Length: 140
Image (tube, rainbow, N blue to C red):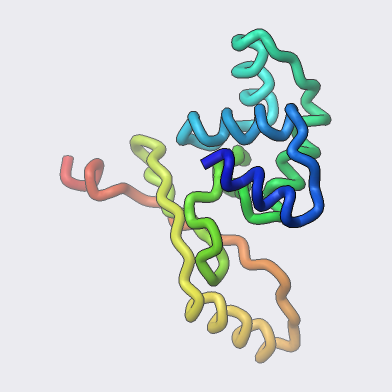
């Protein structure tokens, strides 16, 4: 919900500006990865203009607060659907219909951290996603 995201923004010391609310609303409504230019086009069609630099900055902030995520395979952004679930948030992306399912697994995250440490590396973020077919497309 947009209101929940706004509360998180404010709790982290950020203002709930109109542009931030507008971007959150678009991400909430459209359930597919959107580029900053896609978001700009949707807002323009609704009679509102935000330049793409502002949208990029808003998306960076939302991602830093785990309110949105960048989908690696498309480069687009989606609203986080897991809220405060522990573990790194990841995606399964259907190659056929484009459906996206977000998940988090705390144990997988810890296992990846251990693997990195065993290689002499301290990881701060994990980025990965599964690409394949959702159950609906697989059955076809």
